[in-house]
Length: 164
Image (cartoon, rainbow, N blue to C red; front, side, top):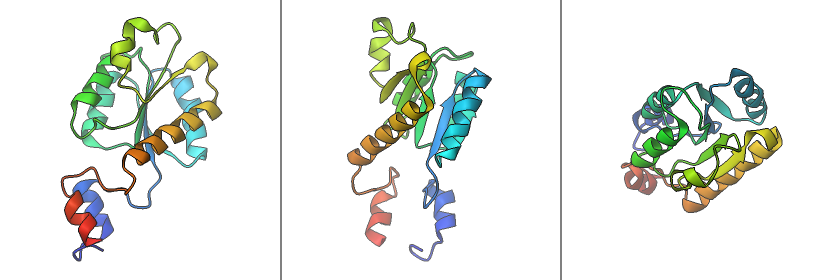
């Protein structure tokens, strides 16, 4: 409790994630790929939300705050590059770790300027589930290193941290 407010209420007010599994938004239009990796990630203790196109991903990102995004580049409605630009343009999402998870032909020099906003890049055809899990843990560790004291990314951070 902080200021007499329960953790459940705080979570609803500012989106804090207290003692919850890390949430991954997996943006992938191939149902087989999505299900295979989702099952592995859930066994690893992650909570997995999914979006099957760029528009759905942007809607989810506006409504929730995942801890990491796995993003295919070839998507219907809005492609992965457009979703990544959207993420980096949103103040609340700007530092959100994003792993590009796409085909070899897409991850090339032509897309380099946009893809620099990604935390990691993985090629589907050569990536195992273990490699993806490792990349997720590394990206989350990097994000934690950028925020070593665990302060919240909320405007209420200072108030809550001093009260703790």
